[in-house]
Image (cartoon, rainbow, N blue to C red; front, side):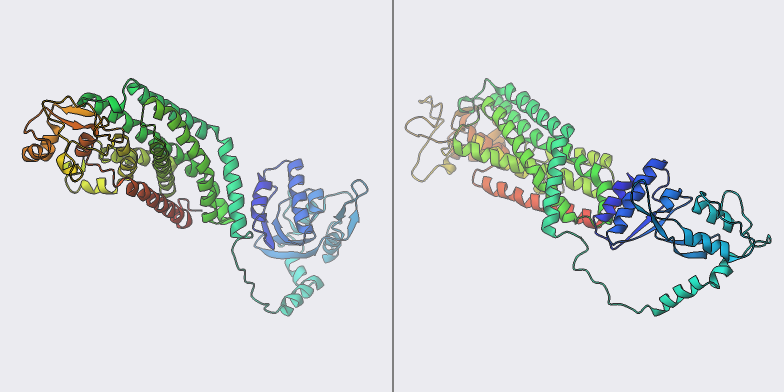
Length: 519
């Protein structure tokens, strides 16, 4: 983990690397591995400043220069640890700390000489009184004042002269805070997220299984029904409810499942942002690209199971539009979950908020209550609900018919009287009407729901009868009761693209400026 942390810092290509006790908590072998990695970094030309306590001789010999401070922050040594020597075993050069040893031995009379074979680090600490056993270099006990010794030494004079000779250099300016270009960041982020998604079986495999279960659960409930053969209210309402449930819950699953993607990786993201590894835009762009193939897989699986099993309209245009609308609907909900995860502090809070928001969207989607039945201020929730746009883009075409039993919806010069007592009309697809669309079957509105929506006068004028039961097409009934139109389907479809962009912009803003940790 220490080496990974150092590698994260090196990703920003720093000219100076600060390390605070990189060997703390490590055994001798691990400490040696870490310090060899640090030594290779220094050999590449970078300045490495490292604090360390009581190092072994092997680790101590890897340092080129030493700044030794005693209690109170006073300098007692600031010089090199040469001369260097080549190891007979490995052939590597190491510093013997001979200059350090001679400095302290010559600093004052009474300093105990260094014993051959003893760790120079232990010698210097014991000499200044900071070791495990206090040496005779403790001021106030008849020892040597090594601070005064240093201040009067040639070493301090040379260093002070070098400091005095420094002149203000040209200010360093960087064109970017990041080592890599935006394009490079984006490509690496895509590669990283694609690999992460491929390995995240718990996320992707689980949601594919849930999509499969949802498709089978609701499609099998209407497997014996066909929209072209519906002629009564209960069957139509069951069919409508099954289609709604299959579409809505397939999309809702994406929001619930995706909350953990950003939520669980947010702490890593904050750390890597502090190291300037990549921009929030590159992070989010990679996540967005990695999500697309899986969303396509979700829609293909859903359509392959749900569409034929529910006996939805098999025209190629209808199938293509359904898949496109479902892709946008599912992706919109997926981005909704990611946005909540970026806004809220923890994955748990985001999951609770996601579940509650989906419940509100479900209630105000227009399925349970049409727009005219929702009072203000609750109608605002209906108008801004993303679910409304997804359902209005996906469902109406599966009930559509270009012919109508309603007089005001008929073409100029066209006369279709579905309530003629002398005829037994079953579908406007039959001759001579030749209607197109899945919702051309003629059904009986026995409850008078159309009349309750439109009024007796409207019913008499458009259907030719004043009271139920009366006949309308499946599309007529669906259009009146859900207040839907086929003309606005593509408007609702492309409106979802606006939601996708808006959710991503908010997510990017939160990742850039919102932090849920203090450090």
